[in-house]
Length: 447
Image (tube, rainbow, N blue to C red):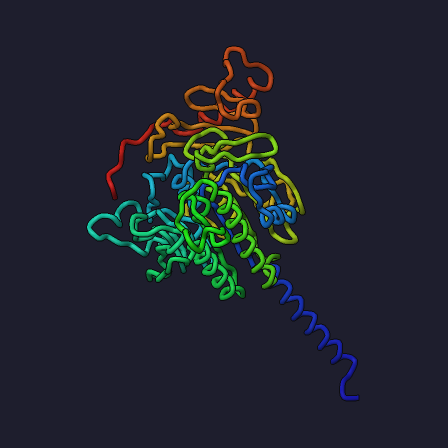
């Protein structure tokens, strides 16, 4: 016999060892991360959240397969949310002025880069400040400073006045201005870039951050609109519904790419939005009509959708009422990547990775908002508050029972509150007292 019984056993053990090693390596590989953040899309805009005005079948399907969070809160307007979600820090710490992220800030892009991830960002940047409008100043290195290997962005070195984000978009990709024609559509360009990035980096861990340009105004046709061929720049509020539908379609394209590459089990996929819907938009829902609240601090300005899907990990179809704060994204990603922030004491968020895996985790008792927009005519909303699922306490003393007063027209009489309301006032008051006192900043000089 050419082989002894002992040699067969030895070969078998070697093969088992090799398989075990491969399985172990696969198990140890940290997950890919995809974070998609729509622009100006309140909680009420997804059909899975009760919308009857718009159809979002792709996001509804993700929610059915994964988790839908009903208590996710952003900042009321775009830059404050973008700074907070990228850095894991509240606005009192590092929001300096509108349209700006200090390049010295450490972001989840830097965290992923340090952990050996391939990283990319696509969509809306608008974080260089106003410097690109002064004396020909340009800085295309800001995305790299924030930890992203590759980028495909609108409003990086060129202001909005030079070109829009939808038909014939003005987009910069990895140091070059892209040529575009009348019927090129910015959201398609960003999405195609992401799909290519995923294809090229499928063998190793990657992080994709997609701050979408949809559904921000101007409200114009999409390539799926009948008006697209003749009047792609026609403005009309009725096109907002078209834009919601197209946004949903693009999210679906990215999800289907993961499925085609068998990456869904290796990818944490999160969808949310940066703030509430534009204040000119009224959206019908199963419980009534919601007026958009972008820029304001009531629910319509800060309550945003959130869906998470990690195949084989997220509980199927679970609806969670755990409080989620935008500062929580960075520590969640850090725990998933097994990566540490160089100065963890600066991070103010809390990881919700256990919840994504079906565990209880450490749910928040409250979320916090420090809001000084440094933009627009929104002075009446400058304030700070803490809230839970039902109650909200502002620094100026207003206690709101949001479950009964979403528009915040009737603050509770603090001399009359009792029972749950009194307990909430005491609990939220202790939390608010932990935070720096609100001090609106003077107007900033352009950096």
